Image (cartoon, rainbow, N blue to C red):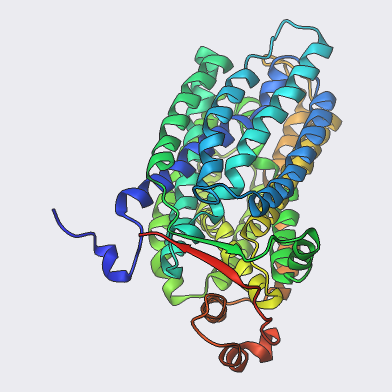
Length: 474
């Protein structure tokens, strides 16, 4: 059997271990695509009014955002005997599977009050289970390997598999749901998702567990976040662009009421997967030649321009609609794959600038902002549709005004959010070559003087690093 070529690059993980890491993202995002993206459609289908759905979404998703920093604190404080992150992933798997099934057991013939209570409690249970894995999975590579390029590949391909999970579920869900119903669809999706997440629970290995010599205090954690301006700038920009990204929440509505066929939602998702697969394969080579932040901005601008064009051309000509959708998907795919690869860069900057190492807190800031988006954008989308006269019920007939509101939310408003985000991102100055130097200083490969000579002009002098305990395994 041939030798794994990646060993020549100094990779410490095995090929099967990396693949199991990527598969975990696939399963995790099948769950996400099933519940988080489609919960408002499910709620309205079982007879909960649009206004009530908006209230439920706001309450549950605000908690959804808040519990991420809480878990980040727990990760940095709780000390399992076998690793920092893998134990959380093993705890999460059965919890997220069971809670997902319970979520879709909501009784459609129950009273309005029962439906609202069940919907709220069930989602909170599912979300807490999801959070237990969502924060650790993004920072696990820092314990799997000390190779910066290897970490980058793990996260880039992980994000690639995550998009396959979301888009794949978006393709299959409308087709299955219209034929076998929500609960049977949830059972199938849950089984597939759990099976793809399972291998990492056995194959994942933390080779390089880094802990502060002394337990990090709450004050030090606040200092780390407050001093990490690029982490805050980047994810505040992501929050702004996501705030109007209503298209992911109303895809089934658009297919049902604007295109007249729910199965079209699956076709639209399928068409978005083709450019995503191509772009995902090309991105590693592209980012070797072009700084990923510059590429990210180019893609954001292109996606915004195409969103405006799509709105004014409309969807009556289905050929033009699909053609523009596919072209825009090229840029949105690159955006979504690159998005969370900036967290390790911000983590290295935070350590360089504050002297503290807090992977759990850094990752929780990422998930906090991404979930806070859902806590506000989802309810806003439902309130907008309610304002246009949306009628609840799976087979309800909607007035033309609702179709107009859906199209506004589906095309023009997302473009507006992107434009505002691009303006804020002009204050984000981190670049790949500088982050590599920070990482070398943070890992003790170069001295403070050497780091200052190369970076102090742009980022200020390096902080004295808190002493760390390194636990190495083969």
